[in-house]
Image 1 (cartoon, rainbow, N blue to C red):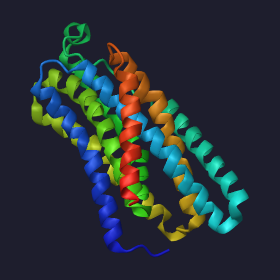
Image 2 (spheres, rainbow, N blue to C red):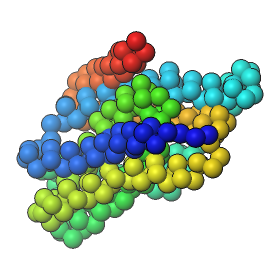
Image 3 (cartoon, one colour):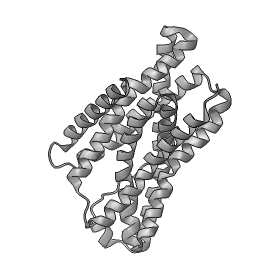
Image 4 (cartoon, rainbow, N blue to C red):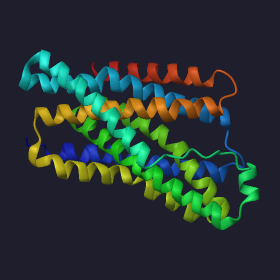
Length: 268
């Protein structure tokens, strides 16, 4: 299946933009002595709602449609469902092998006062490595979604970008307060964020010789499963942890609403 170079470049640019949002998290840390917990909770839930909505309403449907082109509607639905469950299983395995730590983001946390700088720096680097590992499937998701349909890929990239900002904070806080070096903390965030376009390039290079409706169906189904799992396992629990009122549910509903409206506009 031949794909125009322009489409590839657009998909890669969108994926890179979403990944670089990780760096914004570090800027947020540098600008404030203490992150705004309520805003963070709303943003996490917003991203979670957007991810769940686009995964179940668009990406999973893309999987079923792609499979249906070669196997008919009945088998297409079945294969799409199996691919979705495979995606859930895959990210569960990744999460088991490389747990994604969610350190407290408050800079006055006793953790930062009671441990030495070397240990805090190590925690920051381990956090960066874990988040980087989780960014590979996110980059693949954004890239293939944009490649197939920018109307789906752009909203997904927006949701992932929001999700990446608090990840940048989680990386920058321990690194910055251990080293007192803004460039070092910002660089750690950027490296983690660049895992998304790298994951997209590697994934596309591996799958390119076999691109077909069945491959697209498999990729989209797996992506949908991965995104739903990440939203339910990471984003929403983290949002609830930092909320002080109804920020989680407001963010969840707002994320779904904004994503739904954006998809409606893209279809006009």
